[in-house]
Amino acid sequence: MNNLTDYVLAIGTTGSPPVPDVAKTVDLVPGDGDAISSVISGLRASGLTPADFRARVVFLVPEGIGGLVPYAALCGFAGRRIDVYADGTVLEFSRLDRRGEAFVDAGKPSEFLLWAQVGGPTAEGVPTVQLGTGEQRLVSPEAASVIRYAARLRMVPPDSARDALAMFVLVSALRRRADDRFPYLSTGTEPVPVSKEDPSQGIDLEAVRREAARYRQEFRAARKGAEVVPPVPVSARNKRLAEANAVDIRALLRRLGSSPDERGLWYCPRPRRHSDGGETPSMKVFGDNRTRCHRCDSEKLGPVRLAVDVLDITPDEAANFILNSDRVVNMCAA
Image (cartoon, rainbow, N blue to C red):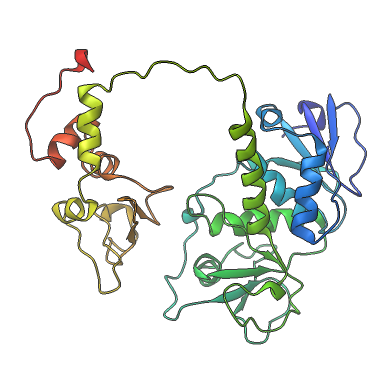
């Protein structure tokens, strides 16, 4: 377990506890406006840059749930989870397993869940689940299904800063796709949602994360002093890999033994990795000619990477397979 003295940078906000013996401290004080614009304004005024997050960083959480919004912004700006100091304890969230699919669920609900809620009293008109405490299982399969598959999720956290942050990280990991997917910060008393994008449901922490990530991109776009160099000729090997990646991934999926259902979801060609033997379609094909199984893949895969993973072969062998060729690429010329 880390101590505060192990960190190079400590980030505080309004109400954060004072900490000694940290090499550098920065304040993120929200500005004016709504919850999202004010925390992004505070992030801009803090002077933090993406380079700061190359070091060991800890967020100093104020009492209660007030630290959830700035924490969501810091995660978006850092591009990862960061550790926190809450209620006198360092919580090493950066070392947690990111694979939310490791939690067993009860399967995809039979009806589409537009909104759901985790925590708090049972909400009228909104499916509500709880996380277990004490000796109970932390997340039941039924609760995991609701948290994972709801299009929008309200989260009513406990009053303790430490417990609220722990709940937030767990729920976000359960909803993970390519990245952790943040819930709405809710009181549990909001009106019944009327649409998927209902602004009356609390603070959209996923929108906070995305706004902070966009701010991070501004630093990349504004970098100066980049040297313009002559283009490097593309090697024969890379041209062949690009050609293979241009092949329709649907055709490759069929060659790998997959097929779509009536909704357009595909059966995963890696059934051994599925608890049900791959009997439930779990792959979505995207418009950029990539696919992703929500059980097997942490991100979208193109044709070459999919063939490599399914067939346990090299990228060059995958290109040959996709292009129906026995051609051997001269690696020395690559």
